[in-house]
Image 1: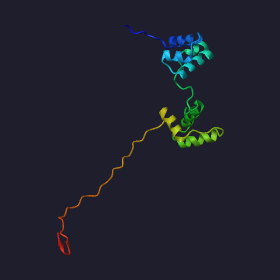
Image 2: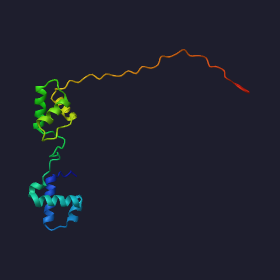
Image 3: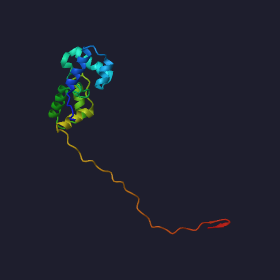
Image 4: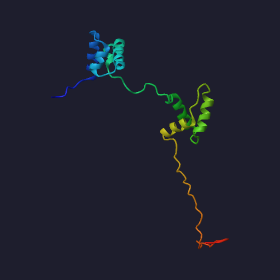
Length: 151
């Protein structure tokens, strides 16, 4: 028996059609193998957007809370271009003076922007080598005499 290939969009259309024909939500959801919560979500999207509401939606977020506005990023790059020896802390101070009405990004964020554009030189990490104590000459064990006991 060959497998029946199905499309999500077609399945959702069939689901909505059965609901529009008067079938109960619980029965239709059971037949399609989905929860009632999902069934109501599909049906509500159909009522709100029509057939377009049944299409797959993008799963990427539309808001990136940690994304820096491009104007601030351009200002960081401009300050670095004007003052090549400055690092992230001085650039942050300059941003505070130039734009007192906005909250400046953290020093680490400024450093990430500079690093992303190749404006930061990475230093070699200096490894700390621990020095141990020098070994001494081993001595033979000494006999200890305790009163009444000889060991």
